[in-house]
Figure 1 (cartoon, rainbow, N blue to C red):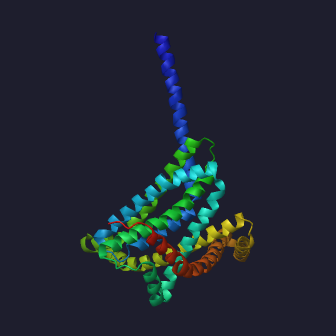
Figure 2 (cartoon, helix red, strand yellow; figure 1 turned 90 degrees about the vertical axis):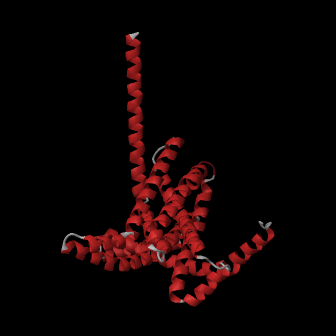
Figure 3 (cartoon, rainbow, N blue to C red; figure 1 turned 180 degrees about the vertical axis):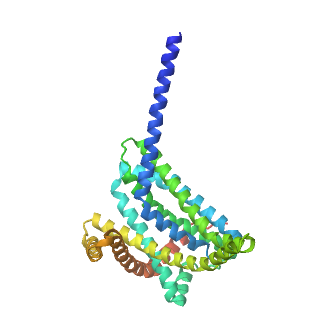
Amino acid sequence: MSVGLLALLDDVAGLVKVAAASLDDVAGQAAKAGVKAAGAVIDDAAVTPNYVTGFTADRELPIVGKIAWGSIKNKLLFLLPAALLLSLFASWLITPLLMLGGAYLCYEGAEKIFHALRPHDAEAHEASLEPTAIEPQSMEDRQVAGAIKTDFILSAEIMTIILAAIDVENFWTRAVILAIAGVGITVAVYGAVALIVKGDDFGLFMARNGRTGAGRAFGRGVVSFMPVFMQALSVIGTAAMTWVGGSIIVHGLYEFGFAGPEHIVEAAAHWAEHLVPAIAGVAGWFATAVVDFGFGIAIGAVMIPVAGYVIAPAWKAIKGLLPKRA
């Protein structure tokens, strides 16, 4: 009896060791996959603070929380099962869907630049897409919805990169790794965003309550710096949105045999690496981002009239055919 019990305990211990090793492997794979997606993660973190600009301080964290929750639902409820099922049954669909998302990001980035350069024309374009008046509360809902839509595209890219980086054959293990990496990235991104958007409140607190002159001076410096930082982050976010969209389109075209744009990007990267060999990696990345941004701007510029004169009228016509809710 005791020998049987000891044997059972030994088996249990062995199973625990195997499970622990598996969990360790899952955690390692999730971390490795997350690093692979670092570029898209940085873009996501740069884009999101734009959506809380213009709101009162007491609404900033609730808005970030809503967007973060929407991001988690995007990843776990939609993108995770879709990515796994597509990889199993229709892997050919992944690239076209990503390219559609990339076109949307290019449109969003180009539309923001259009608004900065030609605000009256941009407002007329936006009015053709959103003809109804916006109340203050619905403006917040609209911003959150816009952020979640943009997050969906960036999250799709992140989840696709993670899936490609997972070196595990078992379906369920891949699903767990994808979920852990997706949730971990979301927590990291929106935790950083929350710290960024509350930086000015922290500076104000230090300026008023610092125990030393240096502490109070530091607080005043933070308060003065944050508007400049947020403006810079807004510009970086728009650029990131555009170059990520351009990059998705360029890589998608390469997948379908149109290699010209990809070759231009590669040539620009090689030229930059040879121009500044001391920082070849950074120079190559920067050149790639600039060229992808150029493609993104061109695609977005085309998408603005397409959205205004084709997509919006078609969508209104479809809505007109649907039964109206009371």
